[in-house]
Length: 435
Ligand SMILES: Cc1cc2nc3c(=O)[nH]c(=O)nc-3n(C[C@H](O)[C@H](O)[C@H](O)COP(=O)(O)OP(=O)(O)OC[C@H]3O[C@@H](n4cnc5c(N)ncnc54)[C@H](O)[C@@H]3O)c2cc1C
Image (cartoon, rainbow, N blue to C red):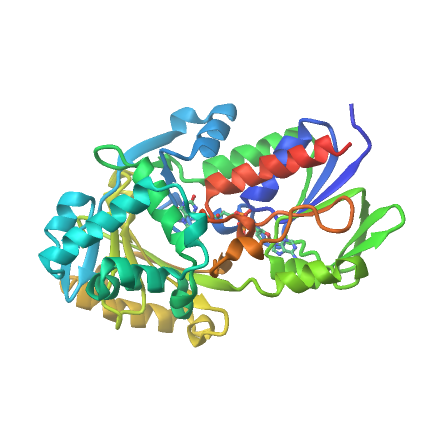
């Protein structure tokens, strides 16, 4: 039975789809607005060699309880498969395996003393649970102090730069703690990572199928321009289209939320706070080739002259047979939103990045590359500044029945599909309990 309450969900990424999925069990009348032509947001897909793949590399961890639970609820458990991941660091034109304590002990760019010291730091971060006292410190300062300058310069700084570009010195140590802590707890003897046999589009497609069966209206290519508060609820404006709702859940970046709600005076203090949240965009170059360049799934690039920070051999993780026995690679980096590279053409970008790939893999032969796709992901990562917990906006805004749920509210953990599912469930519960 419809319960007559109308809910608008803005943003058709994982958080928005899961919010809708959960609320649709309670028979609300739900409409999802997504500006893109497809659903899934940062998890949205494309194809390469006729096989689905994500526009940005994705995998699940064994600790991703919400992903595993939702996958099971949707009847997809047999589609989620687990394979070992393998990691390396490219430094000074050499690759070093980097999968655990033994590899750290053999990591000769660091002195033996610094290897031991770094191992102790990793152990401490893996076991301690008290992240709050770390939050006001920057990861850069804390790591320099406890791991030593060489370990910071050779291992940690490139990792921070890889994720936060120019903001690498401004990241809370609590965020860094969560990365090490979560990852350590997902590792058994060797780390297994999860992936769907037909890519994560399996999860998105299944959610969309359920939503359609439950009469949720899904509007893609429909960017919301404005949200206004009315005596009876809210108006959502998308170009010439104006629709009315009792509840609005925004699963969009905080900066976009602030722009859409400028007309709601009661929100001014709330949105002022949102301006301190800064986002980066991500760029990925995906290509297929018959050449096997790397024996590792994930190679972190620690030579700072190279314009991408990771080289991922996706087919060192999942079977090459999915891609007609070709190898599939991602090269990727995050950039501040005013960075010139975001304005360069796909051709210029791939020419530059392929030239640098030759430095890493001299055997790389561009002439045998088969398919190339450049993807650009807007608002892909926020900067968790020191004491970030103090600026995280609340989910319930000062306006009754207007909610904001975005990955930039997750802290100290890093954003991820698992947390997007958790947040979607959380906001759906808040709404259904508010009645
Ligand atoms: C390079 C990269 C690698 C990643 N790797 C992993 C990984 O390995 N494992 C993992 O778990 N997670 C990974 N993630 C993170 C994961 O993709 C995200 O945490 C998750 O997809 C976030 O979902 P979301 O719905 O919260 O946000 P989003 O996906 O950002 O969804 C927000 C949606 O809102 C839409 N929108 C914005 N403005 C409007 C508007 N005005 N009107 C209508 N719609 C609008 C956007 O188009 C988008 O679809 C990765 C992310 C990136 C960028």
